Length: 394
Image (cartoon, rainbow, N blue to C red):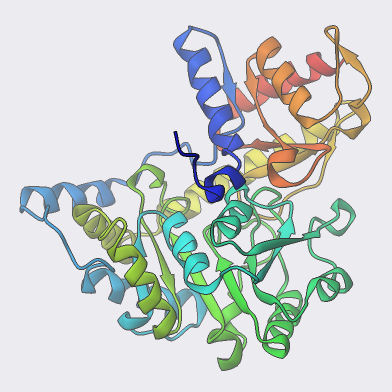
């Protein structure tokens, strides 16, 4: 048998999906399991969005569309970017994809190749580094310290830039830390991108879930940074549409054209009637976003206070998204239930097996010494899950 490609052998499986699969197995076995690993809102998709999809199906809108998305949706995305982010784009600057993950993947493939370097701030979303590896480019990690609220230090960022730097992957709020960059901090990053002529792949999927501060798009700091930026967003988090798989990117026309070629030979168009639902999400009522944001803020406050009251555990208060990075370093070397906690994986594994509480090891995000908890869960489950964690570490 001939061997698999070196490309696939370089990739690591998604630990978040692995934890989620194990959790679902426990549920099927009848265990009273609580999932803090999930990266999706626990709210239902707003009714008017569902009705738009149903109407589209009933009207027979179930065939192929243009690979890059229907004109009506592209117009709605342009209007959204103008109103929310102060960015002027035309439909030729827009591509619609299967979730935000596909435009991100297409952007990396369009911009990066062997010999290039891509700056990846850590902790990072698990797929960023793997997407870079698929292009044969090299991830260059910039460690964001907890003492700096998990944000890049300017000196460290400058040290990571070389003549081979092709791009930086940048997000605010950040998954997994919930960190939010200020406008001044973003402006410095934008200036460095212009000065050293590298691209910014800006993942803005959590822009609507902010509790402290405000969202600013890095592409809004002038024409020079805008022409070097790929803005990626989607409907999954803001509109509780994770399973609908609907995202988009905005960028200069030559980048969008390259991404469109890739998409045309891979998935082609996103699901036709889901595109109609996406139009409804962008043009319809927005009250559900604020209601969901307020609920997340209450859960965040409760989770942060509770964790910091547990001896041996601590966390920072995230400014956005719906995750907490819990510091477990004080537990390393301790024996719990006969098992020595050596790292975040052993902690997460033992916690899941003994208490049926699922968290994601920090090593999945390039942040050993931490585990990620999602508060996209009911307050009742959050309270019970944290009670089990407290008992576990006693």
